[in-house]
Length: 112
Picture: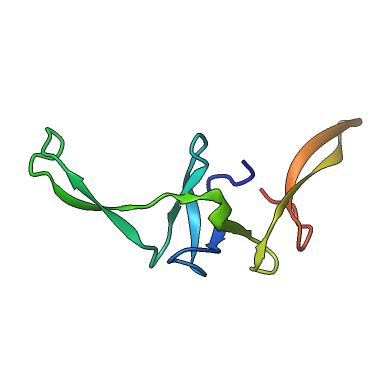
């Protein structure tokens, strides 16, 4: 999966289309992400009473989105972009070290 925790993304389909958020958790097996952000819709979950929540009740939680429904925001242009990988060689103590890095395809800027 090319998206990582902490990436800023924009939702490209669904009821929250056009809204932005930050990835708070990546669910690898189901290929979904949980987002944090203002104005994102939530799902109501009915909870049975338990020791940690003795009253039970209805709780609002953030719904997970499939990774195909979000796109990374380019750090330079602030527009949605795809992610690519490239190898970069660096000089460290008179040695060449190769490293694989992620980059935004629109601007070519290396991502953290």
